[in-house]
Image (cartoon, rainbow, N blue to C red; front, side):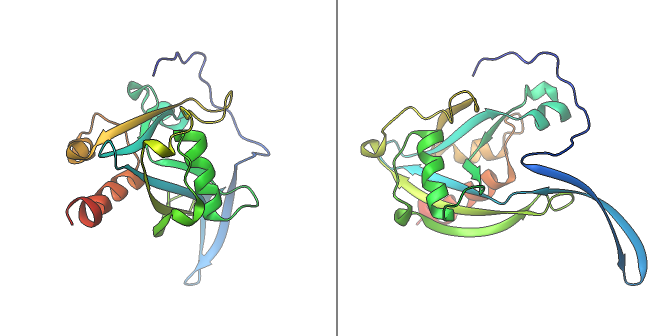
Length: 193
């Protein structure tokens, strides 16, 4: 994935489209407390197994927040296919749409298997992510993927299942906790069964 970041700056966010920062005040056991919170949308992530290639289909993309915190990574992270729940679709329909947009595979919503749901970024956001599993073959591939043109910069990456653990424990590869959890689930429930 080739790109160049220039003139990166941060400023106060007012009237955000996807996140809303706020300052919470409350009493906890009778004591006054406060906390900085970011209200964010829930999301769905999908662990995709390509049976033909015996690989897990992931995405690499530029994440400005990662770039801000550690620009040595160039802001690129390895992630599961995912998207926020901001449309009037079921979680499964959103997952199916994200698989098509980001990875180029057509998967019917009814063919997705729910793994679990969990809260992410609990120290400041507390949004929930719903994790699903999908299996694909070359017959499901209908496009190159890459996300919504002009909005996302996504590279589809397939990780051979015999390299999963290497990727999990390689700290030079910036990755998300959801990806680590999903890879571990795959090892315990699919690959080693």
